[in-house]
Length: 149
Image (cartoon, helix red, strand yellow):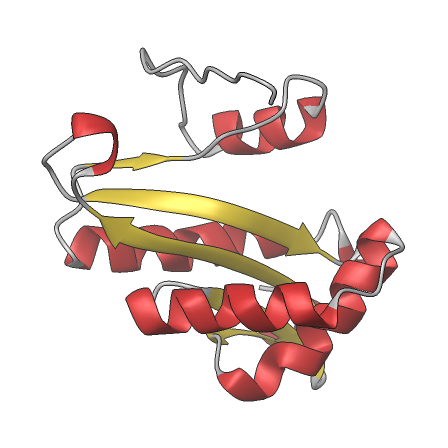
């Protein structure tokens, strides 16, 4: 492990991380969305407080991953891990931050006796598809459907 990687801390998210997540999201997507993130973080902390994880480097938020274990989704009775959101600081990509966040989350899912882990990736996000494929994710027989209103 190199010096930079050893200074990276991966830990569960808490309420005090909200400002750092908001700032990172704004850096990634160019939008300031405090109300959105306040609601999302509160939801995940309520549902599965140890599942969602944060990467800090020298006290700065450089990545986060939100998810939870739940059963009963789409008729699936078994406990299933769901990865909902992944964000990594563009200035820190290529340093295995996403992989380390995923490893921590997958370990939590395993401890919660999840049998599978699922996520959705937009077909135009080849970078995310490649990231999840490198972690061992495969295509799922469940197919997303949408109808505009």
